Image 1 (spheres, rainbow, N blue to C red):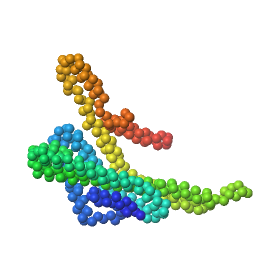
Image 2: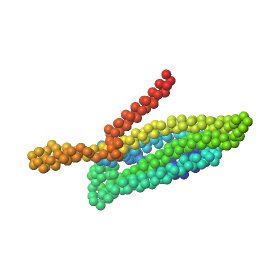
Image 3: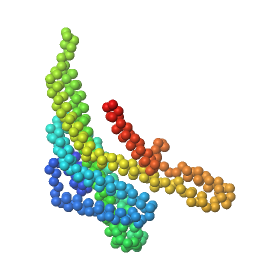
Image 4: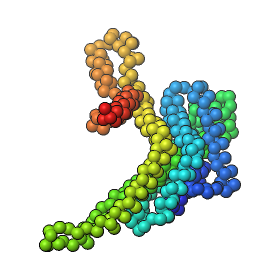
Length: 365
């Protein structure tokens, strides 16, 4: 049992996505997979190049609707993968230490590792296949325009992109759409690949903590069952020496796991922080696209609506009052997905971080 063979989904998605993140100490990928990875990264770079002028030249509504999420996901994927590859030596050291632990695993550890990883397998498979299919369908919708138009503009693409001067022909439109289709599908697969990779790492270390907790409870449980009660002295006779040896071995294992956690923190703390901020931003940015729901009567208000009869004016005033409700994505009015909510969450997170930093210093005093 080791980091690579214990999770086949992680290995397959790592190859299909072209991430080629390290899987073992001597993790060498074939020339075929390296060429494939180069092709995938080339497609992503092309999308980034055509996306930048597209974000400048297309209408703001198109940028907010289709361009923003794509930019955020692309930056997130590039940052997370490049950062892992930049700390490749440290990642290999972490994997090798994990492999040393897993190779010497007893039946208890094998069962705990399996039960820790198994529940996540089906959700991650659903995440991969359902998301991949959704992105594919979403990117194929613009192809229907070839039956309606003969010349095309930048905003006709699925995401803002510039391949040539507008208007352009069907051939340019089809080639551009194929490139955008491939790039969007691959950027999602890359995101799934790095997500599965990091989740796999976290779950393996989590399994080690569960193993320590289980073994510690088992030591005391088994010893108590072997203890003999001396009726004369009314004392329990413990076999301290055997317990001491088992506890020492468990403490050494615990120290190794703590060291692994420290290495994992160095590797992924920044990645997880960026993932958190980007996820909050993506969800809250949906509120921006719905913010126009509170502006439907603003333009008409500056017209001469007051010159009409009482029934018209009353109806218009009721529309204004109803418009103040807006359209909010919330549950039980507990929160609202919007940029103000995003800033509130960041401020609260910053305040909690300062509080946690002050606690140790206060205790030291």
